[in-house]
Image (cartoon, rainbow, N blue to C red; front, side, top):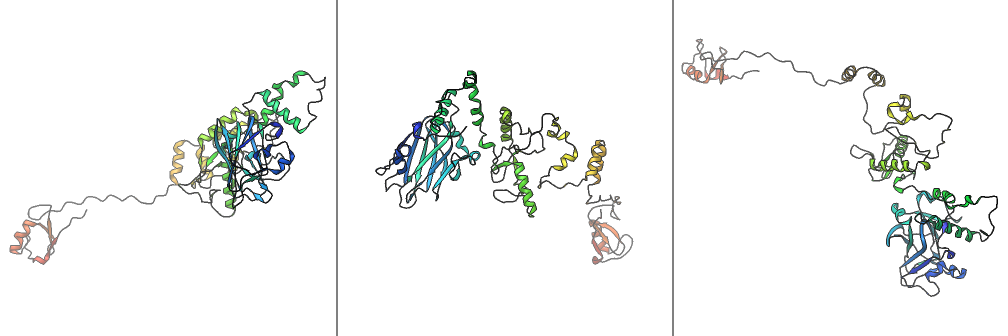
Length: 446
């Protein structure tokens, strides 16, 4: 189903502004049915540097694209702020500053390649949370800004999208019919062929393709680099969230140039305290979303365990005649040859056990496996042999073992009190004469 321009004059939109405008250049020119007034566009008063325009629709809509022509003759608006409204609360959903082109288009990442017209526009993306305020809104506010001494101008604006999902099926079909009649004035004049049964035109069946076309993936589930659905959402040190396969591809490209794995956004290499972390909360939400919308994701695998699979949805689907092998989704059922195809993390610690020893350990009891592992441990120190205890030394006169002195001439040990007695006679008990210089303190050896 094609997009609808809800600012088409035949859909009866409304526009208001609190900014003073020049004569013959009111905001109503933007939605006028008069072709001459449409070409004049909108121009604020000369002293104004900012103009607020508020567009209101008859029904709630889903905004997908906003196209703006910002040049009016030699005048030009250089900046825009886009606001969406939900429950009378306006939230900023887009921003453009220092724009030098003649036309631009605000859109979502998944819609940037699909345009409602053939004219080339400079594409600028909405904010991440813009879907919360543009999926069911009746009002859109545009703030035009100018740089220098020129007033804000707006030559033309278009707001493209779909009817909101909150509307009934009959209301949505009525809006689509009105848009078809605007594009093709002859639409609806011819009666349906009598060969077509009336049941085929029931609202329940005609609304099925619309429901599929309106299906959206939350922006939080998309990769910040590839804009694809993430299977292993990973938080980078810079705070961005990407899929693990994106990190692996970036690390492989860095390795080809001899660089270590790094953050794709900042270029800072991964370190011990700065590594990607798996976002388990977001992964659980994505798995729940895939289960609830399994009819839209038949080619996206359900990933369990640590084996990583490709997240590209354009991968060819297996034929129904061939049996499906579900064993590749579990770690303990994947053969060793298939596990070798998956690249290891570049920041994983080095392993000292060879593949042959690993296979031998898998087939042996746990005691033998521990013994094999212990053989690889390098001993950096040897145990100190125990020395036999020596016999305690004592005084030759009174057998005291503490505070001993040695007489060098006879090598006898004497205590302090006995030494005082010996020095009076200057003779040991063995009748060997000595002087005070022949005596030294004795220290035991252990």
